[in-house]
Image (cartoon, rainbow, N blue to C red):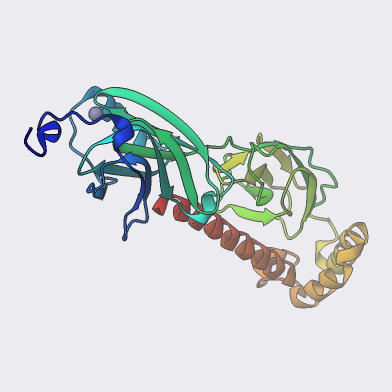
Length: 318
Ligand SMILES: [Zn+2]
């Protein structure tokens, strides 16, 4: 019998194949199982498109482009020689994904296979019986649930806002607060819309508005941000009171009344008075310190937003 006879017949019982672990030197993807002794591991990043015409691959590609799915990566993994039985596949992911459930969709010659695994130490490990395209999606979260509460303590230039985060949607609420303006649909970054942050996490929160225009209709909504996106509460409107009639000679008295209502802010209000002088319209006489404080808080909030966006991107990028 000539040497290699069995090999030419492609007859290799699976117990003949050695148990091996192959790790790709660049992508760090590894495959373990009964694998031919001369097999090489090949990995190709198909994230930007893979041109397979089969229905399953098309469906997977559709999910990759769906904004509701947090798509991570599409890998084509193959071995140059035969393997047998189950393979253990280990794929690196961003450490940002640690603890999150990863869903892996696999096209096995036109049949959809679904695997799930929790990312641990920057890797996703799962077992599969065939190779080729593996699309990885991270567990997605719901939006937080947030309620805009009643507006109280309305004066000619101020009001107290209240809100509540009743659900975090499964992901930490990294920022919450209010947006308000004189247009009826305030949103973050909207024209003429002011954002005030009020902490993070679940539960009730409030914010004191000052420096509003007297006798003006304002619209306010509470908002909450988690890694999914930003959720808004319902729109609540309120009208500031008429400017005090002692405008000409009693402007400062009026201002003092407001200060008394918001005891802690008194010092700030007094400085504002000195700047306002004869004109009682706070908004027209330069930026009072309160506004600078609010602006600083809002700017800090924007930074948080950018950071959380980057986290999501980092998760996607591997
Ligand atoms: Zn396919």
